[in-house]
Length: 104
Image 1 (cartoon, rainbow, N blue to C red):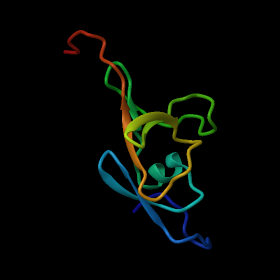
Image 2 (image 1 turned 90 degrees about the vertical axis):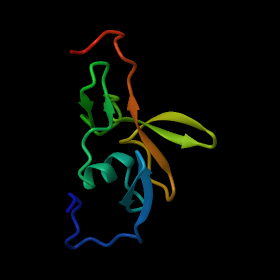
Image 3 (image 1 turned 180 degrees about the vertical axis):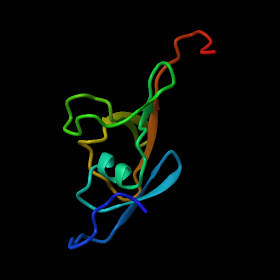
Image 4 (image 1 turned 30 degrees about the horizontal axis):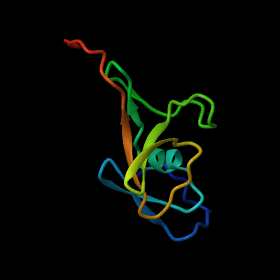
């Protein structure tokens, strides 16, 4: 289904990128956050207690939408709400370090 508004809009041909190994369809000009939200993905990372976190301000201020993007052979951290989609981009959710104790 998704949450992208399609009625009365004209967009370039869709592209795909991967998020945690799953193919996501997006349109050029969208940000990673917009494309993931349209694909009904709300959790972009996990906090130190394992809770899902996702976009909050969607304008680059809060850093809740941080993701990792493959750049060559290494990964870099980006803000999903400011990073445009690109065909073939490899994106993964950010895993926070654990607190070093059992969460049970």
